[in-house]
Image 1 (tube, rainbow, N blue to C red):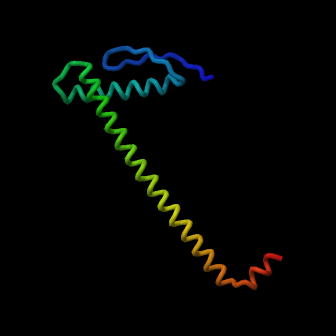
Image 2 (cartoon, rainbow, N blue to C red):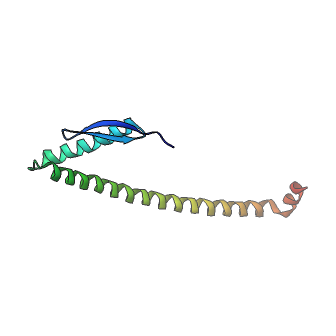
Length: 110
């Protein structure tokens, strides 16, 4: 069982007491949300904190979706690279086998 602790974070001038395993992580999350809300507020004319929170959440969700898409691209690229490397290794192994011939392989197998 994991021990949870309580951490206080201030987000957009409101204090929230949150429970979690790592208070430092909770503080970083709170700072991220606070920063997004303040950035949204600075660029908009609204003072409604709920509206600011929703716009900040949409901003964070957009970043998350972009990162997930980039992650999928990187995984696909890595898969293609791995396939290419395996194919190349197989080809080189076959070429080496042909160059050495059966006679050499029989000698080292003994």
